[in-house]
Structures are given as structure tokens and as C-alpha cells.
Length: 286
Ligand code: NAD
Image (cartoon, rainbow, N blue to C red; front, side):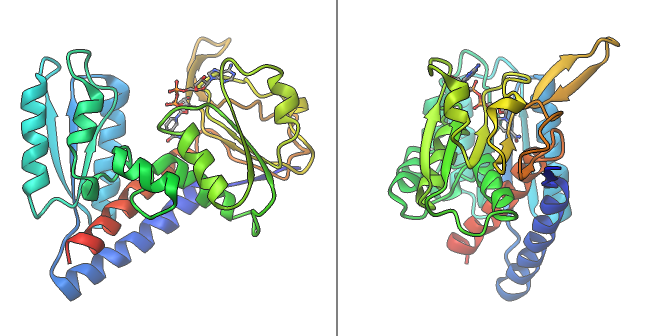
């Protein structure tokens, strides 16, 4: 039977550690880490994510500054807000919830964030730092994947890792983190040929395609560790909506360990966001 890697429990432990670091920063340096959370528009999923981030920030003692802007916000106005957050010493981290409405150029907005406050790790400076292994802030979901893997893998060196998905948010950065740990990494995507055969070679599989039930049990090598990043809303035969991952979990008993959806990578993403915010405050606020 594959072990379940409990992301909810690990995220809870990480948030407690973050809270302890917040208390130390506050007592030793009089600094309360601050996170600016910017949401443009009314997208229901984005609102849920932002609410969760703000709630978890409160639990860890991180102060959040919420900016909820209308869907017709123009780019200059948003850039002005980011400039104000960049200049505000009470703000150590800036998070712009994606996706942004079509009239806004997301790349320009992300580029405008001070890289030292870029707690999502999407700024080109942090992307460059990740690819050269020279520090910087690392994207939260990939960081969460690594923390989950570390609970079941002691030595990553030489392991074969396969990543499904090549997005800037998940696939590419998680591949770089695995490479940094000296795994042999293959990145696959929608155009990859013979995907099942490639996945069968993996000691570590990270599935981040956004395709419900893509990975079948017979694609997974016995003893592999499987991280399911996918969050897919599907309707069951009873007509009820539910969330499923990219991996079919039934019949996966031959894997060594697997993350559930929900309760795997999802909670870790927020825990890593808060850890990044405190890291930014420790580095540049003190
Ligand atoms: P994306 O759409 O930007 O990228 C998806 C990638 O998967 C692309 O590179 C595409 O080529 C590849 N892909 C799609 N279908 C495929 C298939 N059938 N075979 C092989 N490759 C395929 O998505 P993203 O932002 O990287 O997110 C991926 C998934 O992870 C989504 O379900 C998303 O909701 C989820 N996600 C979860 C968290 C979390 O906190 N748990 C965070 C971010 C994203």
C-alpha cells in the first residue's frame, strides 16, 4: 500500500515554525512581516485562494495588507499600487493573484515587483537565481513539492525524476529544484510522445498538467514517489462537483508514496508563501 504524504499536517507544522520565526523577528527587531495581497476582479477561485492566504497569514502572525481592485482596473493604476508596496517598509512580500484580467500585461506587472519582495518567485531575477542556484525567492508550489518529497526521500542524488507540465509556475521551477538536488530530470508536456513510457522510468513523478486522471496506475513504476499537483474541478455521476488531481489514486498500491488531492500540495503552497514572506523580512527588513 502506498503511503499517503499528508500535506495538511506538514503545512500545519511549517506554519507553526513560521509563527515562531515571526515571534522572534518581532521580539528581537520589532519587525512584523507584512504581505501585500493584490486581487484584481471577481474570479471566484482567485477570491477563495486570496481569502485562504490572508487567513493563514493571520494564523502565522504575518500582517496582510489586502488590495481588492475592480475587474476594470487599468495597468497604470496597478503598477502605481505595486510601486507604493515596493516603497512601503511595512511590506516585505507582494503577491499579485493570477490570472489578471486581459487588459493587463501580467509579465509587466510581475516585472515591476521588487525582486526582494517577490514572494511568489516569478520575477525574472528570482527565476535567474533559481536556474543558477544562487539563492533568491523560490516559487511556492514547487517549494512545497520538494518539502513533501523530503519527508519520504533522504538522498535525491541520481534518482530519475519526471515532471509532467512545463509551466513557469510549477513544471519548470520544480524541475530546476530536482536538478539542483542532482536528480536526472525529464520535463514532459502536451506534445511529449510516448508519455506513459517516460513516466514508467521515474523514481519521482511530479504531475502538474491540470488534466484530471491523466496518470494511470500502470504508468507508475513500483516504489516510485508521486506528487500530484493537479487541481481539477470535475462533476461526478451524482452531479456533484469535486476536486481531483492529475493522478488516478485507485490501484496505485505499488507506489512507495503519493500525495492526496485535496490535502497534498495545495496546503503546502500557502505554507511556503508565508515562509517566503518571513524569509524576505529576515533578509531585508532587519
Ligand atoms: P498550465 O496550464 O500553465 O500548464 C500545464 C502544463 O501541462 C503545460 O506545460 C502542458 O503542456 C502540460 N500538459 C497539459 N496536459 C497534458 C497532457 N495531457 N499530457 C502532458 N502534458 C500536459 O498549468 P499550471 O499552472 O502549471 O498548473 C498545473 C496544475 O497544477 C493545474 O491543475 C493547477 O490547478 C495546479 N496547480 C496547483 C497548485 C497547488 O497549490 N496545488 C498551484 C498551481 C497549480
